[in-house]
Figure 1: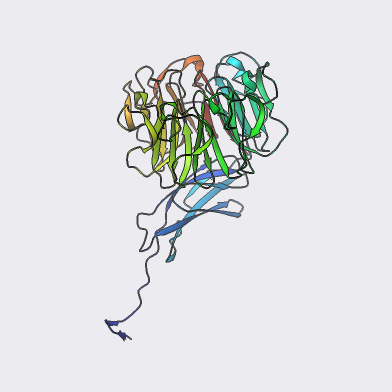
Figure 2: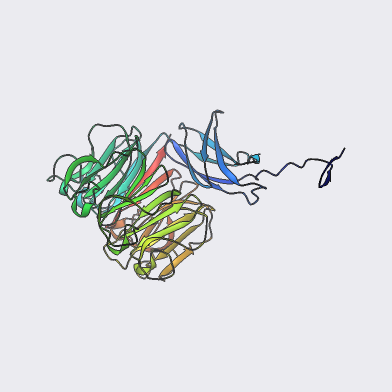
Length: 473
């Protein structure tokens, strides 16, 4: 049957096409998973408004998370067993195709903490000054969730009970234990609270976020690095402002600047603004948080030596600050004082930039949503870019041809990265055995460390120490 109208006739109503299924990749973690959602090739005849990721455990239980755009989606999952993931895109014409449970990852109840390399300031957390050239467990607990290292002085970690622990140098009150005179070579708890979420450790100072969205800092206060609108040193945590929507905090190399992300997708910085490190299109120092631009679609942040990187929800990568050795990835050596996009790609998922006492020996390592690994910056001495040579690059170059990398860490002329199978790979400058290969040989391309398949996070300092967390069920 046809129906006539003023412009002619139609014989049937045609349904408008909804989006195809997105593609997914997943990396397991401690009571959580990071699922990278890649937009479908065919978005249908409408505009995609959101994505839903569904996690199904082996016991049949289901958890979902919703994101407004493609990119990395964190989803909290009860530990144990294997979890499978599926995705679906939504537009104004309704739900798109369901991808099916086509990717999986292990989700752990906690993690064992390991360190390797030097023990200056007690940074190895082994309660001694011994150099370890292979991974050595820190204590016997398996309740660690995340770890962060500074340039050379301190390390910190959060446990699954959301307690915060710190070790290393005590100068300026960096240990947050109301003293400035006693270094600690094993982890000590910061207060007694059980609501810490994550921490960005800097030289002699730190900034941390709580589960209630508040942000706190302590240690050296010069140049406004604590964000408290003054330059007073603090030997215990002090809240920055009253906002309750902070999500992540990072410290730049020297600890003189901070970068922080809000749950609203807004990006803030404070501290020493020299060389454009604060992204404010100037070189002014700010002693309290100042928003970088007006964008509200930032999703991931990373910092290095007077440089910062951030990924947006659309998968674009941006950088700013000092550009020695081409570490910013713009195919030049020009400093940038405001966020500048790295190339035109829209599939970046993770990034790490190095800490170095030499401004010319910086490098950056990043991962894309397709699992490829990329690097750029200084590479003349030890092959820290993992490219199998000693040629520096000022724009991203793929490391090998594999497509199963998940996350990474970078430091002075060296890198570490975890694959989706949970194996750990290292390369570059192996001073003090920091690469954990039981030797001090330098490597210019990735080499597997050990045979374990349950690594979930790695962190590195400038001066020859590294940490990793192995997941346990």
